[in-house]
Image (cartoon, rainbow, N blue to C red; front, side, top):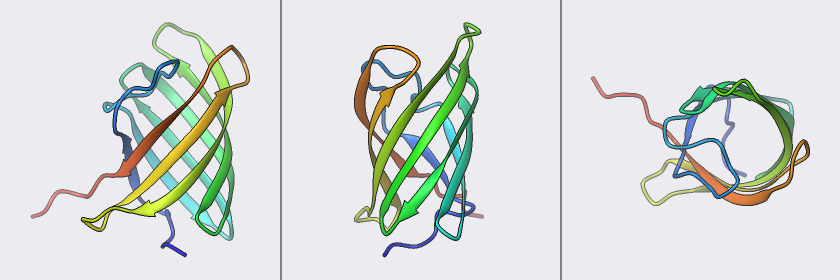
Length: 116
């Protein structure tokens, strides 16, 4: 099993069709005893939160967010955690909106703190 997500920051690799997060969005993850949660913002997202569980290297969570247009949205996501060749962590996501039509796949990758 890969290490805990607690205290790690992730950023999307791009913007998925039907999605609202993009490379300007930052996810701050927390993890404890099989529970995961995160706050996220940036780009078109003013506030976002996710909460769920982790079993091995699979995360399952629900998310809710507020975009810059003042619209709220919510959905469900299942993600698989892996390690990139440079050592950073990656989450490959399969998600669907529950509050509106649309579904897709996307990925977020660990953002390393600046050196120095």
